[in-house]
Image (cartoon, rainbow over all chains, first blue to last red; front, side):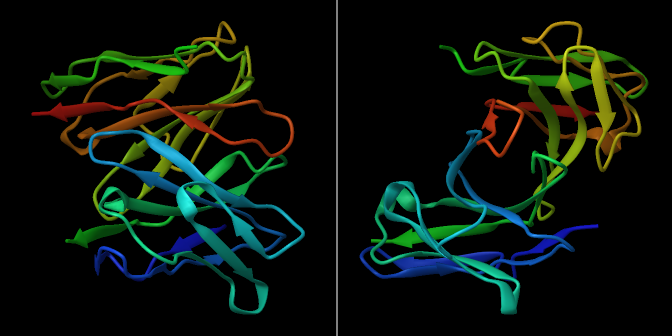
Length: 114
Length: 113
């Protein structure tokens, strides 16, 4: 069975600083990988996804993620955070024939200091 | 397009009561699913459906029933609520065949006392 680990429960970053969120996955086949963001009291919004091809993927809101098969990682990065990036971020791996069955990590809550 | 809608937004139940959480989408998506979100555990898949008339269990199906009589609706039924079912419930949908983004509803916060 697949699993996802997000080692950092909370991260505090200053506005304008860079951000990196870690994600490690376990899956027996080629993974379908996703990053979602959840603002307080809201549902989840897709930031980016990886299925194949270029291992550096670009997403919305200035985020990018890099797939490293050798490290079973899919870390999310942003060069310069904005106060509006304060949210909870979830990494997920998709299973099933169409990758629709998502297994989520526990989430990383990001706090942005002014 | 309203996207994925869920009702109610909040609900308090007593142990043993039953209720149905409603989910509807207007995007003609084939795939729909229900997740529950608990602190520190991310979201866990309860049930999913790949099309009208077809449902299957996810990771944590016990205590929940689903049916899919139409493409648009995917209700989640709690047969006899238990305090362990206190959670935030999210419905999601996607186009289905192939790898497509899942769209999430705003969630239902359920408390069982």
